[in-house]
Image (cartoon, rainbow, N blue to C red; front, side, top):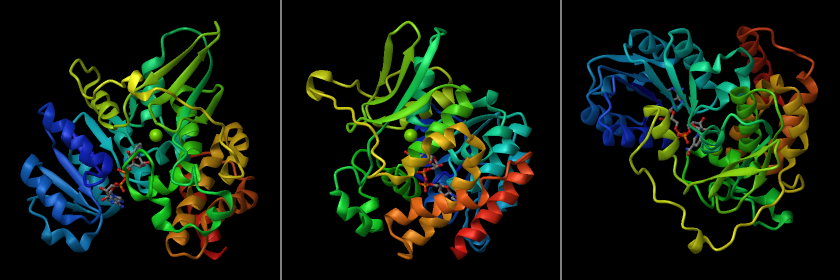
Length: 356
Ligand code: NAD
Ligand code: MG
């Protein structure tokens, strides 16, 4: 297989599963963490690697190195592997997603932004999601008639902070996720609840049109629930680890223990809460976005710019949702007709948000 984003949180866990099941790694890709990438090259002996930052090419210990955005696509074209794990972060993951599908490869997709922005133009029939909620939903599907699907949120780093303090929180506060250790961008997205909005869109593209919603389950032990038309509800319980979704995405079927079971007697109680827009202002646009999923391209581009601004302390936590709403007001009339138009919209929204 090819692992894109191998030095990140999902990439590292993917390589753990590859090692456990003795899977062949043909190619690796990372942005700039040369030290870790060289360790991975030594351990997995890939035929080639791709590096985002071209200046680092000479420092890599692999014979064949591809560089930059196009380098990732060239590596995919050279690859004989039938499986690609896309664990890149953000919009940078979209082209490799499209390319992998074009090449007829099976895609284990962690890069949810690919579906958030381009879901309308992405054939999902060969995609297995690496996201605990979507893995949970897929696990629960049973052929019975579905009324609605629910995914859960932990509530992120701002869950228990007094409301009046939220506008004053900084990057270090946003990174204090209560339950999961993940990359920086998704941890910020979890704090603002943008991640859950993205996951609702991801679910819509993966499982089709339907009723989707999210609730807070603070212990992150239930990841997904399905309400069936017959009146019953099933829930997927698993301890918080991405290794289970990754193992399924890589292997298709798993008969060996990956995690220990959730011990309900130790857990004792579970709590469920609705997502409050006064804490998570992005939630005000949830219904509009779900009714018009093509708006995901605008939300994503604005969010990526807003996160950069938040990191540089040019805007506060609330400013992230404000910038996204401002971009929606400006661009919501645009209805992309092709993936090329998605790239155009992305660029326009970024330019607008940089100035705003
Ligand atoms: P991360 O920041 O830890 O890792 C990102 C990886 O992508 C790194 O290896 C980085 O070097 C590489 N990368 C980034 N930009 C690149 C570029 N331009 N060229 C080449 N390589 C580049 O992120 P993560 O937490 O592993 O998340 C990856 C994706 O998986 C995101 O879309 C995220 O939403 C999704 N996801 C993550 C988790 C999790 O537990 N971490 C769970 C569900 C979904
Ligand atoms: Mg998730």
